[in-house]
Image 1 (cartoon, one colour):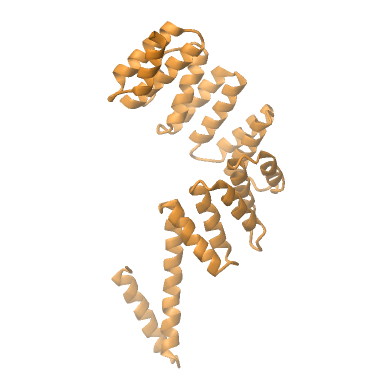
Image 2 (cartoon, rainbow, N blue to C red):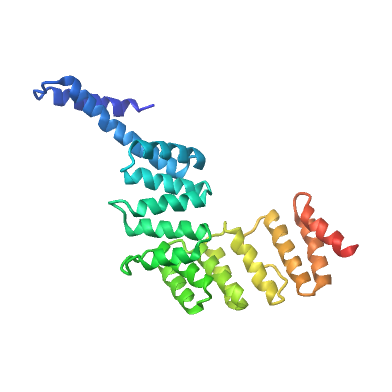
Length: 282
């Protein structure tokens, strides 16, 4: 429902214009409320792109795009919503369509590359990124460039792109986690640990980074929990990860002890840890 104040302002605007000698007051009223509807449509689109249920957003933008197929904003909204709804194959097709439209930008090409990576089409994503002008220097572009370089095991390029990406954002926690995982896969466990620690420092809600930090420490046979923010459930889960890592490295007794600690720590029944311990003790 529109706010009374907004409605009053609109009516006042209509009255003022009508008082200026408008020959067709009805046409003026229609124009005024058409402008209000445009504002409402923009606000609704913003809601759909952020907090709305992704599948509802897909339905909304699919209908809008069908009504106005040349409106690039609707096409972008549809493509973004499909990605949010984890319909990545459809999302990639939608972003491909956007990049071919009249008012398409380099950002649209970057989004298309992101959709292709999500869909597992790394080769095509690389080609799309290669077509983005080098002057288009954005965080997302370099993060994707780093991921592509990683997939090809071009480590020096990956490190360079990750470093640039970190410098282009005020919230580098997630990309530091990606960079750390890259180091982990290369066997550079100490550097991976450093990057995961920095990732958690930047964003204490990133449980994936916390879990990866445990993997990096356990790879060095360090079976102690780091001093990082964690609740009781997270602590139990991290102990479980550490236990499995220890067992995998042949440190079975250490792993058993960590499993027992994980079971005792968890505020509820920790079925995964219980099963692991039973399997070892049988």
